[in-house]
Length: 137
Image (cartoon, rainbow, N blue to C red):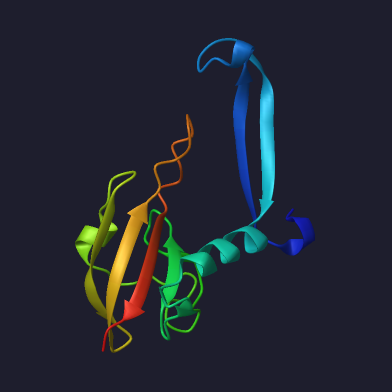
């Protein structure tokens, strides 16, 4: 059951003897994050800006490994659950890779920057990709 019926992000990892990457497991460390309070400040901090002001029509969003939007600053144009038709070079990234380009969505032309997670330490990540867009028409 979800805490307060909200979405959570849960990480866990083994605690190994003497802090080694391999060896005797001593226990497990689990961390629960409130997804809403974690993700939106990060995305809002990535919004495209000119002279400190957010560019009108700019957006930032995460997609999962199925390319479905899982978090967004623009729920009108990049809806949760939507598969946004992005250039293949922005979709088919390897872990830690980035790409940029131009694409059209919602009858608007956008410039896009994308980066795929590389995980953290021994954690491989979930294959999510961050996209930041701004209209150029």
